[in-house]
Length: 305
Image (cartoon, rainbow, N blue to C red; front, side, top):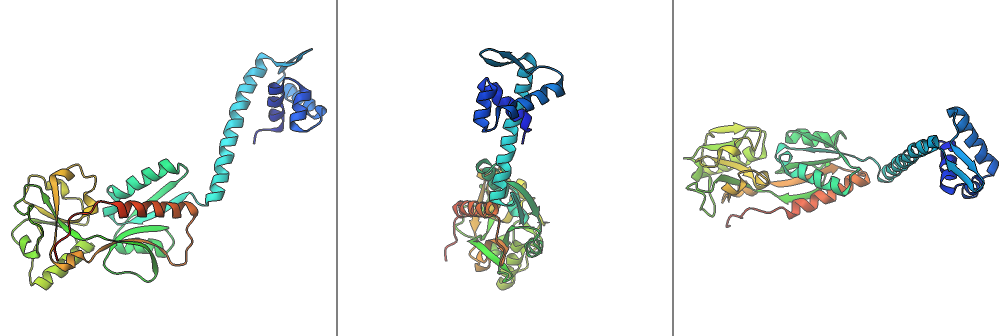
């Protein structure tokens, strides 16, 4: 990508003679001489000192050689990167997810993957479940992560991992020592819960309806981790997936207790792509990387049947 004149100039500087440079470049010595003369004419200064034993760089030649060597190395780096991109296809990995995955899991996956594949770039879109699916259907994202209670036939499920809802509370909470909880155990505690657009709320409402209960939460948000900082030292119980707790600053001070209500176990993490779409090689590699992380994620205790 550097000019022919600079390439011949560097070869003469390396070989110490026009004849040697011509042999290395497989061209006539006159072609080398013309290019060197053209460079010197353009700069108005001699780049070599012609001596009986060969050609040595002048002071100006040494300055130009330093620049030309740096330019040649940079050109080689850019060329290699372009070739890699051509081999890998699109290096921008476009992701969509619901906000529970955006707290820590996906950012950590992206950072770890970029250490292995530094050429990778990421575009993450965080949305509600129905919008996450739309991102895939309309081709705006290549991969999506969401919690689900039912599958969409228009989308391809690349991975399905069980993700029950847990009661999360301070380690010293009166209910923290229980092996499992039921909806009735939540009637007398301040409850933190997602709004009606979240899978947690949908499962909670179904479990309460089947148990003949009406429980009014004290704290409601569409952001599942919004109230987690309130839990240490309090009597609040939050309903959340176990993945949301990973990496939380107060994670060691919290416990996750499973529910005996079967509705609270009817949820999965779903990794989605569009049916019939072939992912670029780098996106497929990230999908496999992320799937390994999801299946290796520590799990909270299971409720006894």
